[in-house]
Length: 239
Length: 238
Image (cartoon, each protein chain N blue to C red):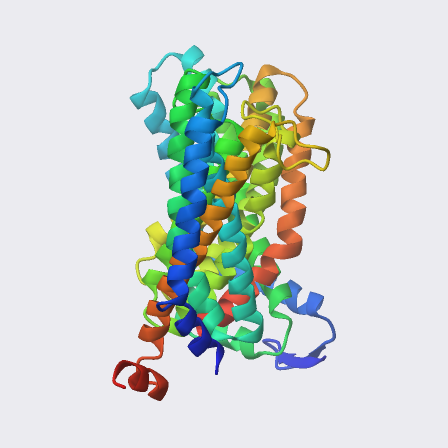
């Protein structure tokens, strides 16, 4: 099914595939988000603050912190990705653009995948770069950096996808922060378990491939099924 | 007669009493058989008898969630409103079964493993199931528009069904502290009949109890949703 759009120069383009629409959506979301850089930076600052709380609350001894570092890093990553989910649909839902997306005739599943991909590029990927830095502050050896980056990057894909379902379901609920957490966190627990396991193995210096494969499997499962659920949820919320 | 009227009748006396009394009989035999007739376990002595509450409620927590998810899917796909009402009625019952399963399991774990809780895959995924039930009920209550609440919580119920096979197979997939399946096997069960019969009776009794509770709740749900329909006004004021 083709559709026409006009670019800034007023030229008409025919969209011949949902993939083209998805590409446009990713570019649009990233461009818009880069205009509000606070939205990208705030979850990262939250992550840094939360990882700071644990040494203050537990003990400043690096050896003890190193033991709890995988869990601390992953819980903080989970919570900050929850925070970042607020920005996924909020602006588009407020000014009616989301309704236009639903009515556009383009495959809403592809558009949801595109929005989630853009969201991951803006939150999950920066998080995976910040995580080893926070790890260093928790006594994690520098050799584990690669493992932490890969596991957080892979795990945050699934987190963004699951979170998109929760965000779509709670679109019309006011002050949905706690409810969004209640819906998203139980489904994200497997990601937390295997991500922390991968990080722990990376810190020890052993091969972290097995949990990484499972994280990848969850990411693939999410990519195939989560956009469908998110699209259905968006349609329901906007009915 | 429509589905709604049929369910309303089924949830009213005398039909619902049939479910209730049959359930009570089966549970009574199960309790008597489990506490008195079944011989003590060679390893655990009398401690194992809590299985007669723990295992049926755990099975029911999964069964009820599956029922809820199927009803929710029917409501989503075919837009049959009574399916949404049924799913809404299932949720609190399922959450209660899950809570009882977790608590009885915790008490049993204290006797058998020396700890009230252990973060092994089956216990963790059962806890996630409880959170899914609570999330379903929370999402439903957070929305004012009934139709939107129905459909949104239905999406959540369908998404959460992935947890049910994880709970069931967690003891075979992982090296779990929890006991491997000894009843739900394709081969002959490894449990003797004197212990098995009361267990099956409790399971059937709890299933009928769930049916009775579901029908009562569903009847109330129908009355609330259809309160302006003529057949209800005739039924209430004959």
